Amino acid sequence: MEAILERPTLPPLTQALLDCIMFAMEDQANTYYIDLKEGELLNEDEMNYIIDEQGLDAKVFDERFLPIPDWEPSDGFQLMEQFSLQVRNPLYRERLLSALQSGRGVFRKFKDALAEIPILERKWYAFKDEHLKRAVVSWYRDQEGSFNLLALNDEDSEVLLDDILLEDFTFETYEGSPSEQVLALVQELFEEMENGSEEQQISALLLTRHFENEDIKHFQLAKAQDGTLAAFLSYIPLSDSLVEVPLFGVKKEFRGLGLFRMIFDSFARQMARFHYRKIVVTLAGDAVGLERIFSPYGVYCATKQLLLTSESWNLEHPSSEQAFV
Image (tube, rainbow, N blue to C red; front, top):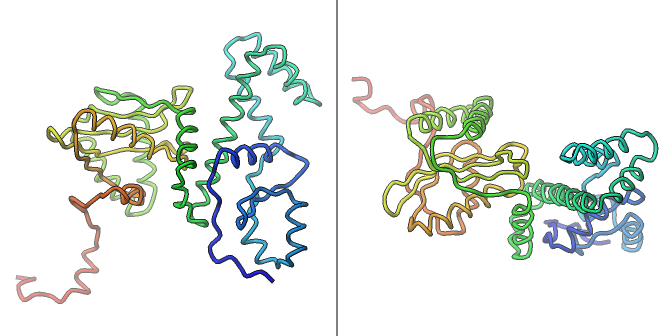
């Protein structure tokens, strides 16, 4: 009997594997799994053959075979509806929506309506592929805790993930007082922290004070295709060679895609062109975990804020003779 896998890992998300997963998600007739040992995508029949041939028990099965993300007909319908609502031409938009509201056979009627408009048909397939890509990449990122996906530093995988983000988002600089979109996202982030743990609440207080007291007029922005602000990064030049990043954030629905890494990459390369050689980044709340992104690049600690309770100090530290004088 085969030994239990001690550290199952996902294979690198290459273009070939991504294409296979996307195709399999739309195949409603079969169920698919990733074989973590071989790094291959298998349908249920192929997987059962391996299980029978090698006599795998249930525990080994759970650790070796990972089901791919679900993609139900309802998901496809919602995507078609979302696409139709974004079509600007009212005649084409109504034709597609009418096909979706026609009862039985809506998928075929939708495709037939698209076939009448070749340009729109090509846009639909590009739209669908982008959303499937995003679903797969997000699912891969969600496995980090269980599968230690920091191993996804494979060059092909990183290039692929970056290409997907570059297709879905635009990156730009903004100079001046914070726009309404930036202020709305900042408020959303602060409210999220204020409703979180005690540590997050304290971080929100510190960051709010910093944001309100500083005259921040430099921003790096990431926007989705519809113009929605997906992420921002604020910065303050401190000297001819030093710049500070006091506050940044990613909108909740766009997290897990590697968007912070992309916006920081865009920012860092621009700073180098402006001859800023060093960048100070403030990490607070859940963002403290982002230190792992910077650690491979020779980062060092310039300052650090520590949170402790007076009670723990008073109980654990011996009182000095002058403490109560």
